[in-house]
Amino acid sequence: MSKFKIYLEYDGTRYSGWQKQNNAKTIQGSVIKALSEIFGNDKFDFQGSGRTDSGVHALCQVAHLEAKTMLAPEILKLKINDILPHDINILEIKKAAPDFHARHDAISRSYIYQISRRRTAFGKNYVWWIKDKLNFKAMDDASKLFKGMHDFSSFAEEDKEDKSKKVLVEDIQLKEIGDLILIHVQGSHFIWKMVRRVTGILVEVGRNRKSIHDVDYYLNNLSNEPAKFTAPPSGLYLAKVLYNGDKQEDIIEPMLKISKHRQ
Image 1 (cartoon, rainbow, N blue to C red):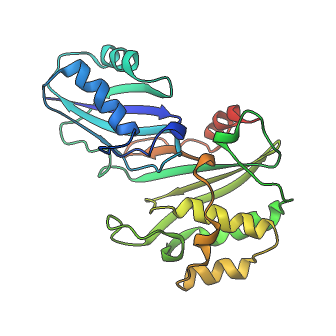
Image 2 (image 1 turned 180 degrees about the vertical axis):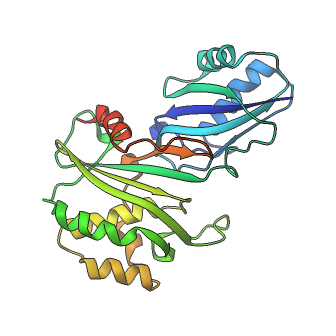
């Protein structure tokens, strides 16, 4: 058996998230279908670094493939991409150590959320359009409270796979690019709907409907309030998954890449 590390990007608009489901079209399910055509009935294992929800995109998801094959990584990449639909693309395939696991070996993940301050004819599936005027400085100031180790119970949907609601947010940055506000969050891991609810509350701060004191309260007390402001999945992108030995890239690179989707 050979082990491979696979980097892929996808537009999640048409899919019911990453994880394979019996009665829905998913990213993992689509890749598994392509692999089945290549390997026939031979057994193989294909697992991602983590789940993304319905409608959420990925600039660089990471997965592992274990299969009995003599195909070189570049040939395997070409074969898979020839079968995959247009909105899923294998970026790179590398040989991996036999014990490599895309999810368990990840040490850090980052997401980018893209907000548009104007209506767009082309980018509806890739942004959250906010009609109201947003106070960027207030949002930026409030975002700093999320940095560090916190219990994100108030920002998470109940999920049996999330054993702990404590998350180390290593970095959070907001940046303005033209009509866009980009929110970049990097952490040890993320729990279900956490980034979308953090974004939703920051937008409420930007609208002057919530304050920095409200953010502090939600981080230190259990509240259902953030759930009411969950941001839509369309603006969310899995940007990067880091492993031991990976170089930490500057935040500007993924931001500039994502900005190509702007209106």
